[in-house]
Length: 147
Image (cartoon, rainbow, N blue to C red; front, side, top):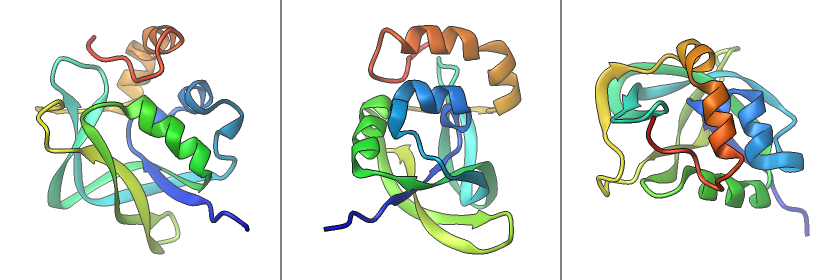
């Protein structure tokens, strides 16, 4: 029986190919393209270098769409995201304007993750925090929490 690949939208650290490879190894998606998450705003998580999204009907959040995520890779992503997130299906817009549903890790409502008022910028994270983040990730199965 063939397994249908899953579609995921990544708006934070998983935008970075090196982070995807560190988390997923050989299960990293081969097909990834720029896309935009509709109805959500990206913010820095409190006391952390990674982002969370908050619902905002007028917002558009840039990121990447992974088109061929296996169920095994989803299990690795669930472990990486850890406590405080859950995967939900939301509308994503591809670069060509086509809209589709994709799984997105959003706060689970438990209060384990809180958004700050500060927008999260991928390029700033990449130049300022990526190296330390990847170093901490090598010793953990979940995303490094805290600074």
